[in-house]
Image (cartoon, rainbow, N blue to C red; front, side, top):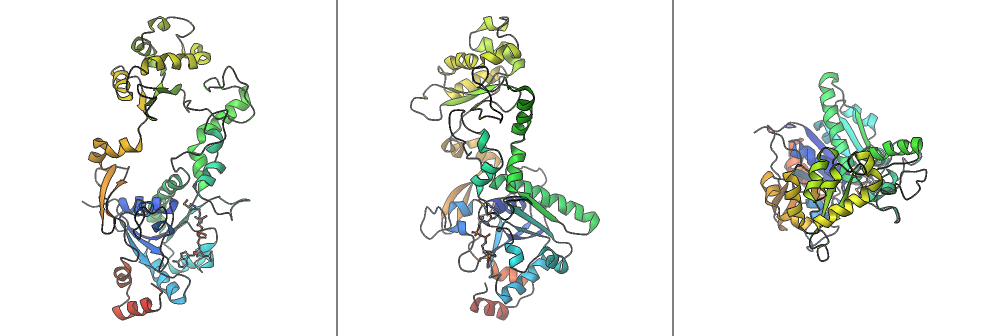
Length: 415
Ligand code: CAO
């Protein structure tokens, strides 16, 4: 079956995580992604966090599926000549170098436009234009600079970063959407354009509910659904809210049976207002259905911790799965805390291709997260990541080099 982005050629200059997340998604949607890597060493993540000596790391393999790999020394004159041909051949150049690196290589926006006015140049940078635009950025820097860390964690502890890679993978997602939109716009304009996704902006976008709360706090001085209320005073900035829900329905993480030994025997419970009656019945507190101190969402706000403690008395008698099944019988929303071990073994995720087993020539079998976006007319088949330079000859032939020219490039260590 044809793929959504079939025929789109991506010149993939990305490395580490943010850029590769973006181009992997585009590859899964059907684009031909040609990953250009440093001759000899390649993407630094090939050798980072290795679990098998000499074999591409899971860090690399899990971010570079369905791509082709071409090695190229883009700082040499002959390497630049090859790159020029690639720019003419491709539709999109994606990069996440440190600020200015592409310009220093000689491939400014103006030069790229001269070579190929239809080319879309898409970049991940740490910061957008402003005082920090020249700074290098990694995941946790973006989480801190984008507002996530200051609003994650508990009130009496330090700021926390989250395991979800919202800075890297989150920004890669933003960039992928920008690229697809630019390809769409190019259909009518015939021109490429620059697409920028700054990691700080991406994280802030994902934290927009906290900017909402900042303004609520500034206006009213209090946020009643936060665990600080009514016992602690609020400061001037949005505080860390522990496990409180970011939305209008209060929630908290509760212990379940076995929590003493299992660090993940917990359930996220949501005291959703429309099912308050069902919640009271499920936990055996029918009196709360009519008690004016508990009957309405507003009345419950100063008593949320008491409500959660009561629900927890009930969840402690059940495993997280039993509690989830029981609550869902009454449409009460909740979520078990699933470990990576549990997710890796979950049959339904394997069945949908969200978790896939891949075979790799030097690594053997490993698990990866497949394409989380499912399209009825553009199914994803996850293929293993390329070995370093695996497709150099193939790609060079496609752009017009013959065997002897390729041999010369190899002898000169350009590829
Ligand atoms: N051939 C020759 N040289 C190459 C090359 C190739 N194929 N590919 C890259 N290079 C060169 C670059 O041109 C650059 O050279 P100069 O510094 O002389 O211009 C050099 O390699 C290093 O590139 P870099 O600065 O991007 O890499 P770094 O390891 O120093 O920094 C990172 C890494 C991620 C901090 C930086 O790239 C960055 O800030 N990127 C933008 C934000 C981002 O994506 N961060 C997320 C990374 S994932 O956590």
